[in-house]
Image 1 (cartoon, rainbow, N blue to C red):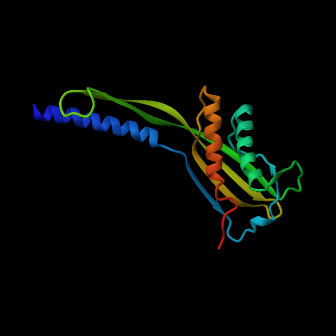
Image 2 (image 1 turned 120 degrees about the horizontal axis):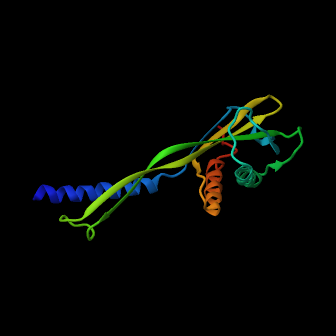
Image 3 (image 1 turned 120 degrees about the vertical axis):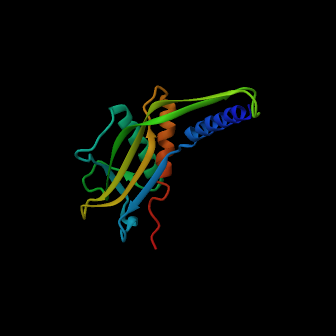
Length: 180
């Protein structure tokens, strides 16, 4: 009898842990830059298309560019269509599928006897956005960043835009990079 009660309790604990884990999955961002690059010389930027890259539909493309433009203009950069821009900026996306665990328990709260817990899995789309910046005068990649769990096509457009804006703010937080 004691084993049964303990098993129900552990099932509930595991179910609640899985629920917490699913909610705790936040956006991950990483970036890297070319050492020795003088980022103070960049004042203007132009959007470029990266050949062979994967791009979303036109609506999501505009949303992504708006989120990035907002951050870059906040950093003092000016968007231009001129080929004489100081910096070329491009992005690409990838949407992967990932398992999401949905868990819940019932049975009157945290007690040792009775109660049930269950966990089910579902597939969700998790999007990664890679942002690259090139110095057109040297034709080199000078900054690159990656934000995961950023693009998740759903029916809630406002939630998608907020998620995208937060990811770009987080990604570009350390741009321009501090160099020693």
